[in-house]
Image (cartoon, rainbow, N blue to C red; front, side, top):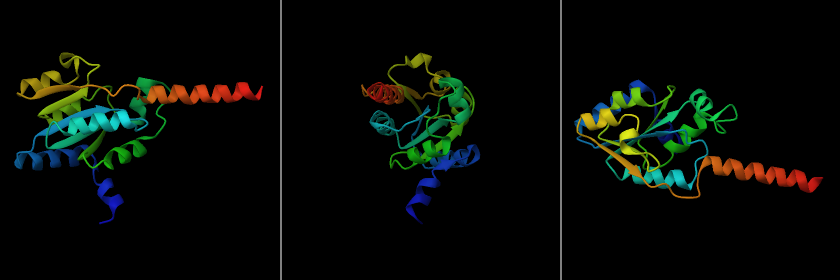
Length: 172
């Protein structure tokens, strides 16, 4: 199998994800779940996701669809489309499955997966994390991870705009 195919098969439909979850459960794997837009993959994402992966045996990353990102972030986003975002995430060795969701939150996806560990950034209080009730209700763990400061898609976007504006001003 070619390397790109090994990446591509990690991007799954809801049904494929549930089949993998069933297999992982039979193998007594600890399932970790996280979600986000992951618009421009950067070092902050890699740090966060690698720490999330350390919380269990398999890591599922749920990614907002393009439509969902636009509703959350505005018409100018996403910068990278959902195919690009999911493939980049799937290329990370410590990510086991990537699945898209179109709802405003991943609550339905969390209900389907029933993860053992739910992970979000430390900018959230655990009890305010979407799906907290589901995971805690089944005896799981909700974990927050410190965010690597200075890295965010919004900051990158702001720097690009500043550089563009500086270039325009220097041409005047």
